Length: 298
Ligand code: HSE
Image (cartoon, rainbow, N blue to C red; front, side, top):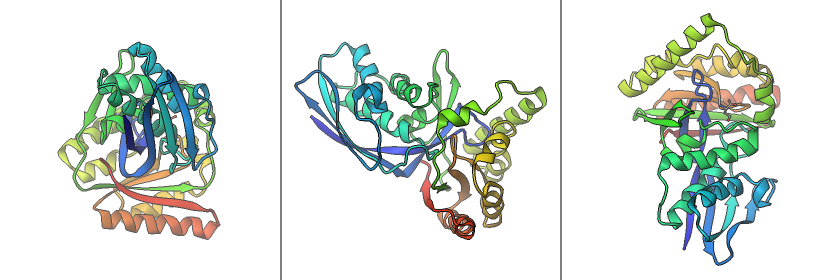
């Protein structure tokens, strides 16, 4: 009647796949304990590590869980404890980790009435609360694992994508908070055809590279002509981090989700660690505090 689960951090967008592509990190994430209780509904009884609302209706885990319970017609009740390791506003899917953890655990404790795709839909309600938009590019990989592509939102169609065996991510988080809602407001709502052509060329290239484990193709495809030029202005040292990552051997890099975290992909863990060292030095030089993580995509 009780589950303790790992809720992975995620890299959304992955450069060329704004709002559709995402990847789950194997070794970075929160923990959550979910237990059945006699009282109907959902209560957040503990929230450790971050200053976030605990009222069920204001908490992404609460809202996502309630969406599931409403659809199930269940009269059961659940208590949730959240142990946050992912910082809110860091760009590695903090809200998605909590929303997906809640729906995954509650579904399990109810005897799994819903499919993983249905869980994505419930977890998206948490994202709607957090950012104003029910995007699925963090919650889908958090639930399915590995890389996922949201082929369509209406109807929701999520495609799990093969993850190459030697692909590692390095993520550096400069200690500033960028709210997803704010970093969405600065985006243009129209793109021009020439940029679109480059973008979907890269997105197709990236997906092909992931399936064929063609690391050079993955690197060539990690380019974003639409969102990165606008959002990177909010991120200190962005261009420098990109160039030192490349020099240290990374395949490519970009903004993780809505930032300010920056991710780089590398072939092999040793290179990913070296990339992390090179990234750190940039922030040490300009005096910005940071966290850095290396993880397999899984
Ligand atoms: N696709 C979303 C965005 C991800 O970039 O706004 C937010 O984590």
